[in-house]
Image (cartoon, rainbow, N blue to C red):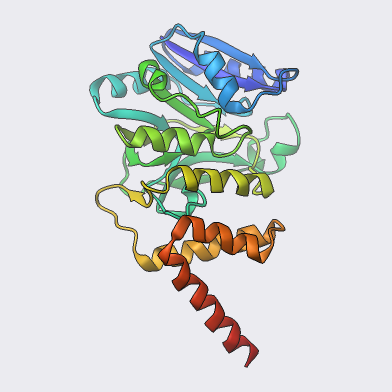
Length: 289
């Protein structure tokens, strides 16, 4: 059995998602809706509390603002997990490697199969014309190996969640809980992106100051493991310099002082930081000339 788990603040939107699951999942399931309108928990705490009540052998953590259109996806995920002993989490979007200067799974060689909402994110109506289809599947696979996954849809065996619960002590809000959870799983298992299901997502994420704070927490927590990638990939010195620059400008965009930007980059990069800092100085002097 699959336990469907969601953290909800909009009952009508949540019910639309649950109706689509009822019509498509194709296996026995239960639903655990964590009503977060009063408790206002961070999503890690909400998910852990809900999952502790689950009776299913498998847990499926989903955002409430989705609709699933493809039938029998539950049966296919269970079959794959049972036949794949090293299977960690399965999602619908993810990246093949994680930089030391991790920003998001989407800036690496990434995999994705999702209809993302633009106009529809502003209302509850199901308007397919307002959705943009994002599909990246270079090897034309049904299941593709990944490192970090997006939290819009996460399927995992319950006993693997028990050994690797969401880190509610570090991640208090709604950012990087998914990156942290799936990256931790990747240290022992193999995560996958599933391309056999059409999933419609009715909102877009926000990269804001609190996102940057949680990005930094993730980088600090996993500093000794990053960079990390699938065996066929390698993150070069130049790749890290490029990502450090992107992280720097993201901090600046979200009103971090230049001193704080450099301070954080130093704590994550050690010696690499001095190369980055030197290149910044040289570039600035060339601009001034």
